[in-house]
Image (cartoon, rainbow, N blue to C red; front, side):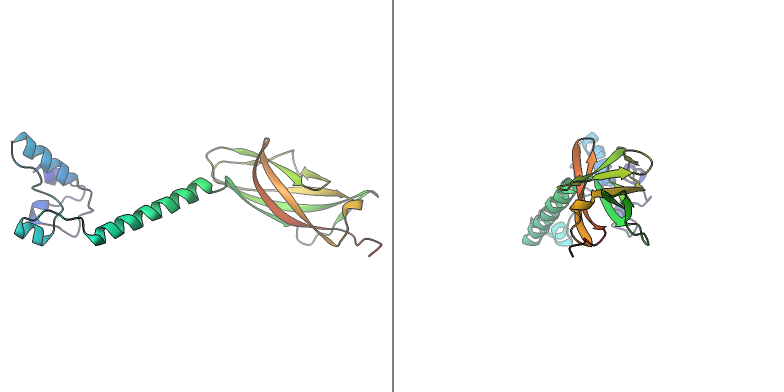
Length: 200
């Protein structure tokens, strides 16, 4: 009765395969253990085909089984690559709807943005924003960094401030680096809206 006692669904495998079977193979292990203790042959309960049982033929590793094994290996490699190459965070940056640029004196212009970040790691990330390849500054609302809790989504607001001399068109494409300390973990792009230059 050991094969019945270990079954999580409570079926009697001695009556054959049943719909409730979940394929956990606990009954196989229990049966083999009991057969060894009583000095009998193992594999009384096992995976086998009807032809294999009737003709006492061993299970053959067929071409179909080889193809399924190869396909499973390929899928495992692809899944492992996707997991290892995924970014720690997934960020979306948008200009605050309905707001124009803000003039800060005669020398600089700012835009207000909203950032939404999904933290895919098991640690809290103090997110620091920096402009990439562009003169200017990023000023987070409420502090220097945006706190992103582990395995959660968070949002924050920040200003991008550019010198007026750097604005050469109505819209300026910017690259924004996302940093955890000194480590760059992602980069996103956004548009900066500014005044039309006088020479245009």
